[in-house]
Length: 170
Image 1 (cartoon, rainbow, N blue to C red):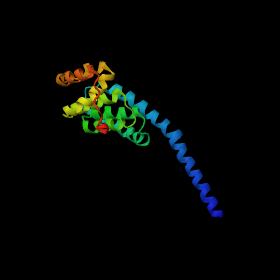
Image 2 (tube, rainbow, N blue to C red):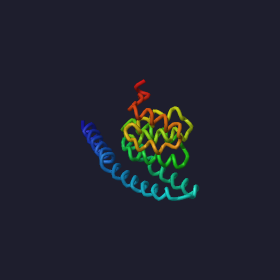
Image 3 (spheres, rainbow, N blue to C red):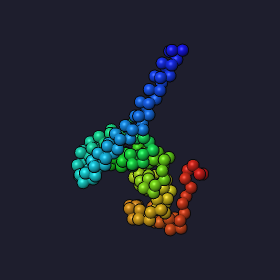
Image 4 (cartoon, rainbow, N blue to C red):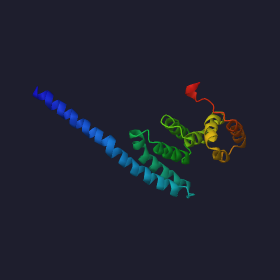
């Protein structure tokens, strides 16, 4: 009986440490990581050296990934990771990140970034749906679509307020 009480006490203490890590420490640490990566990413946008950009994005992703794993519902971490994968021309990874972000939130920015990454990866037909959703909600995104054919198709669908069904609704 004494051992049982000791085991229960140890489990309670271990549970308290796990709770402390995920409720208090991890979000604070990840917030600091996100702020540092945001600053680095903003500075990186002004650079023209491809090698320096590659190194910086690799370092950014190394810092972000543990936080994305611990706090997948924090959309800003997902958006930062997607932007850094895009800067490295890793469009399939960026697509995966934005699709994961859509599990937690439906911001038009996520749909727009997903559509743009699909375009960059050569998936033109697949890009229409997320771009239409984004541009239906935020019409200012239409001007940022570089492919004029896709822009025209999205503009026509968005003007009619046609929001295509998501894959899970089909």
